[in-house]
Length: 224
Length: 247
Image 1 (cartoon, rainbow over the protein chains, first blue to last red):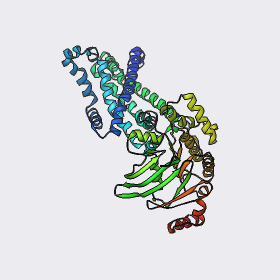
Image 2 (image 1 turned 120 degrees about the vertical axis):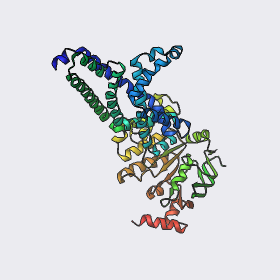
Image 3 (image 1 turned 60 degrees about the vertical axis):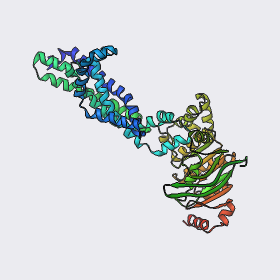
Image 4 (image 1 turned 135 degrees about the vertical axis):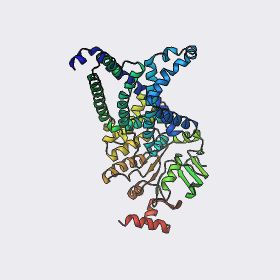
């Protein structure tokens, strides 16, 4: 067990870093992508609300692995068009394709989380914003969004942890995240204990994130 | 319309669906006048003052605020709201902002006042409501009375000509009630036009120029406080006064 870890330490570390980077990037980019979707879901009864609902339903409904395959392997079919558009550098790269799939997926879930907490903000807050003559944009950016974020933090943290584990699917489209490295080491050693080490890495990463979230929540508890 | 009229209701009617909440309201509020609106619950008194800053729409008649006739256009509503401040029963401070930030948000974002000036002005108003030493506290660190005083300062930072109070003390304990009322008495002394929905009859007696008594969506009686409390003109007002004094 020790040699499986210490002997391959630089690969484990590379995998751990990549897993942490991919999950964090996808959650952060997904958060900003989710904001307009959540706003449309919460406030618009027209076409925007409908489009947002469509987005959420599609990307929550399609399995992440299928999405990764469609984007990474599927884009190869359109390589000429993508070259023409100057986008081929993006779609030929498994890392970018994987990140895109993760972002599309988590944005749908995060949009629903944020929409839920926007909807729990009482009308009295909206009336206060109106009475203070705040513009709709100021009201959203400076009041509704911070309050919604504070309320949404526990489920958003949950989504972050889910994403850490979801990144393990990246290994299947040739990305060397933790799981990718584990598969590689396994293919050289045929020692199943490799996956115990991988599991331990995920566990430690999730516990670290959980600890960080708990501290952050405690700091902003007065907000909600 | 007289130049010294701050708010004028003219045959105003309001409905919530089929329910007739405000019936043929006629009332002139002079500049600098302090009006206390009272009446049993469900009588339409909150709805009446919420029409003044367009939190509620009305369906017929006219309502003039600072000479501007309120219609449903955003530009008129925004113009009117620049003249009108409002305090709510549950204070509604922004929980994620300090007392000072609560006071400066709208001046900075809506009126585009430079941050330093907005903060200086906010500190002046916080001092006026005796909350300057709590400027950097968050609402959750303040008592109800303190929160309501910050809410009053926040409204004043918009430099309104008219202040509306919607039962500002009814969510407070007795001690907090008197600290908030003290601030409101100060404000009344400063010549602010005020419309205040309250059950604090002591405040009404001390501060109000006129008391408006409402029941079932109608203005039943408008009287000076002395007359209203000692010698109500209408049977319904007399009955109401008896009920609130009897416990």
